[in-house]
Length: 144
Length: 202
Image (cartoon, rainbow over all chains, first blue to last red; front, top):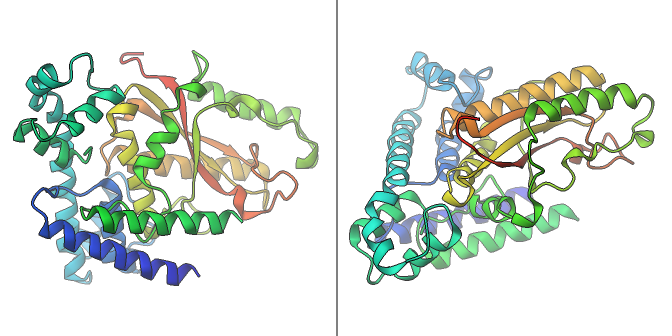
C-alpha cells in the first residue's frame, strides 16, 4: 500500500514539476519540503550507507558528504548544491516581499499588513494589477 | 483507520498539485504540506495562555513523572498542552537514536515551510518528541529530547528558521496518544505546538 502510494505520488510530483517548467510564472525556488524530498531522493541511499550517524542539521551532513565525495553519487552532490542555492534564494525572496510589495499594498490592499492573513490574500487576488516585482517576490517566496 | 485517512489526503494533494501545474507541494515522503500546518497552527481560537514557555513544559513533564508512578493507564493526563494549536508529525528516526532518516527530510521541510509563512511569523513554537512505553521511562525522556533537538537543529540550520522562535521539548512517554495501548507505535511522534505570541527580545 505504502509503496504503490509513493509511486503514484512520485508520478504526481514529476508531472507537477514538468508542468511547472512549461508554465511562465513558475517559481525559481523550491519549497523547504521539496528541498527535503530532493535530498532524500538523490542522497538518501548514500547518507544511510556512508553517513549513517550524521544528522540533517548543523552542517554535519554537508561535511560528511564532502569528506566522502569520492564515494557519493554525482547526482547527490549536484542536487545538494541546487538545494542550498534554491533555499537561499527562497529565503531572500521571503525577506524581500514586504519591500517589493509596499507600493502595491498601499495602492490595492489598504488596511492589510504583512503578517496578517489578508495581506497575501489581497496581493494574490489582485495579481493582474500588482507589479511584476511584487508577484515575482511572492512567487519565489512560495506564498502565491 | 488513521492510515487510510492519511493516504486519502496524500492522494488528493497529489491531484491538486497536478491540476495547479506549478511546483506541487505533494511529495513522496509526507502526508503533510506546509499549508496544512499553517492552517492548523494559525487557529486563533486555540491561543496559548500568556507566559507559557518551553521551560514550563519541561518542568511539568518532570513533575508528571514524580506524581504518576505505576502503569500508564493510571496516570493523570498531562493537560498543559491539550488546548494548544498543534499537529502531529511522523518523523522516522534510526533505531534508539536521534538520527533523522532521509525519508523524513521533506516532512521537516514542510514544518519549515509553515514556520517561514508570514501568518505564523508572530508566534513561538515548541517541537516535542514522544516515545511509546517500550524501555525505561527516563531513557525515553532523554531520547525524546534528543530527537526533538535534532528536528529543531535541522529547522534552524539547514532550513533557516529563526532559532528564537522554536524550542525543543522531550515529553518522553508522559503524553501518550493511546494510553490504553502504551506500546502502540502511534505514540511515537513529534508535535509542532504553537505556544503563543513571539515578542522579539523576550
